[in-house]
Image 1 (cartoon, protein in one colour):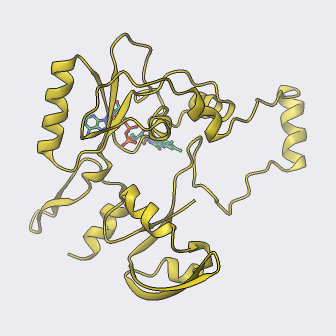
Image 2 (cartoon, rainbow, N blue to C red):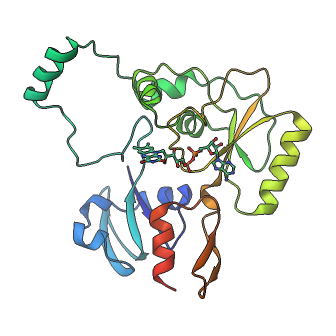
Length: 238
Ligand SMILES: Cc1cc2nc3c(=O)[nH]c(=O)nc-3n(C[C@H](O)[C@H](O)[C@H](O)COP(=O)(O)OP(=O)(O)OC[C@H]3O[C@@H](n4cnc5c(N)ncnc54)[C@H](O)[C@@H]3O)c2cc1C
């Protein structure tokens, strides 16, 4: 899947909104890295030609649900035969793990234990996408579908006031909270443990703005969910 990010916003809704109209892979690579661009795109959707004006600041791929990298990546990660032979000589023949699909794992997600709340999403797929970090055991578990614990819901607050609301709610309802930044922990930080209490993952990804910059000391303050590339992009314009 491919995501179009408009402005500095990384919202999933932007991805869904735009990807339903455009085949981003049809955009030449050189245009994908030109920022910002105002383009007129003529893209077929089924048999209909639609003309839309879009401001493209950046185009990026959506992160893999079960490993490191992006979905539909062009990168070929097949081991070559020489490396296979070397590995076989060093550690013996391997046993391939089963390959689970996203739908296989989504089907394993149990009903949520959280009551409905306007800031909390209990959709099974978003719960899968926040269930594990990026350690090797995490990758093997996700690839083989050997995943049995999921957050009961995921919140993506956009302000400190919403974080406060969520924490107050969690305290009142005895909910375990897992803060989630980029989800790249390699030591199991963000993996929900089996628990009698419901688990809420708070994904900080939408709190990704430059909050303050002191040009003299060159000290910049950002929302805690900002990722490196977006941080660099926002500093370009200062
Ligand atoms: C391929 C790869 C290479 C890596 N290379 C390096 C390396 O060279 N050097 C290195 O040091 N690390 C490396 N790491 C580890 C990685 O940098 C760290 O896991 C990363 O810094 C964690 O940041 P994150 O935003 O993804 O946090 P997450 O994984 O989302 O969270 C990590 C921990 O911080 C907590 N947390 C997250 N956000 C908040 C918040 N706003 N408030 C309070 N708590 C919060 C989480 O609850 C969790 O306990 C690598 C990881 C990968 C996958």
